[in-house]
Length: 79
Image (cartoon, rainbow, N blue to C red; front, side):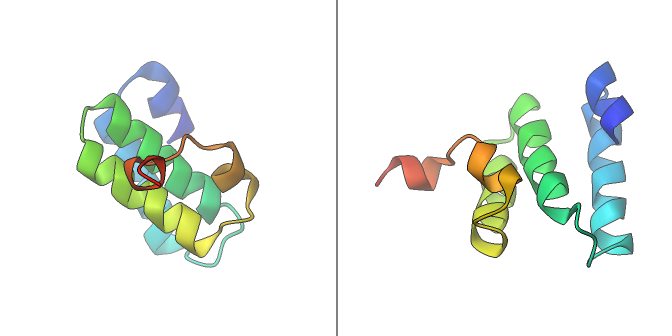
C-alpha cells in the first residue's frame, strides 16, 4: 500500500489499505492505515471519504501518533 501511495497510484493504495483493515483488524498498524486512507482519499479529492476515515481514526485511536499527527478533519475544524 505504501509503495502505491508513494507512486501516486492512489486507487491501488486504497485497495491494499482496506485489505489490511479486513485481514488484520487487531494489528497495531490500524491507526496508521486509517490515517493513510484519509490522506489517500483527500489526494483523490473525495472529502467525504477522507473525513470518514479521519473521524474513525480520531474516535477509535485518539491518542495514537497517527491521530495526533494528522490534519484535523472538517468536523473538528468547525469547533
